[in-house]
Length: 143
Image 1 (cartoon, rainbow, N blue to C red):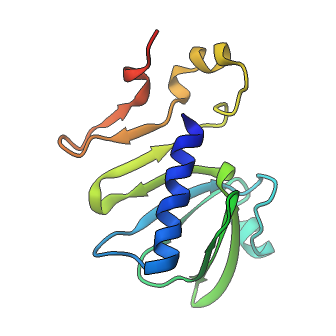
Image 2: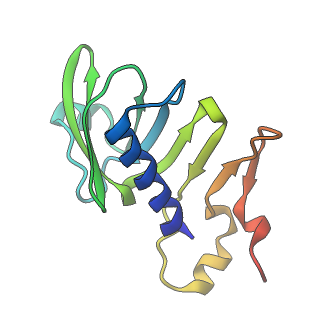
Image 3: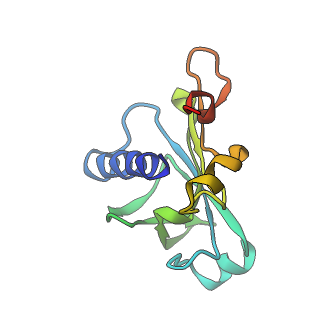
C-alpha cells in the first residue's frame, strides 16, 4: 500500500515536471533529512538536522523525477539551492488546494506483515475531500 502511494507521488511530480503546476495546485513535502540519499546544502542540513518541509508553488526549477527520487531547485533566502530527495525519505505530501494529503511514518517499511498490522497509527492518511477530515486508510483494511 505504501509503495502504491509513493507511486502516486512519482506520477504527480512527473506530470508537474512535464507540464508545470496546474491551476492553484501546490505541494508541501516534508522529508527526513537524515535519510540515505538526501542531498541538500550543508547550511540547510545544519538548519534542518532531522526533517524539512519544502513548498513547491510559485517558483521552482529543474524538477526531475526518477523512479526512486526527485531533484528540484528551490529558493532559500533568494538563493537557489538544488535538493535531491529519495521518495523513501518523504514523511508527508500535501496539496492543500484540493485538500489531499498522505503521511508516511518511520515504521512503515517493515517487511513483516504482522508488524505492519500492529502499527495502525503508522498507516498513511488521506484527507476526505467531502468533509476535509483526515481518514486513516486502516479503516478500509480487511482483518
